[in-house]
Length: 55
Picture 1 (cartoon, helix red, strand yellow):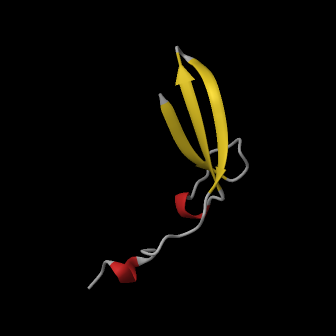
Picture 2 (picture 1 turned 90 degrees about the horizontal axis):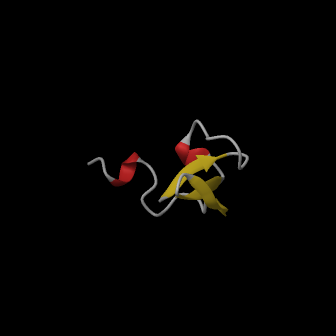
């Protein structure tokens, strides 16, 4: 199973999803951590902000 959380430092879960600079992806197998990957959050996509969905 793979789990992903947002993080500010690669150790602690961030309190704010949209402002965290990293994703920590952890693969768990048989109750043990098999692999960890720290991936950069690439910033807001083209639909960032309420103005794109509020009419």
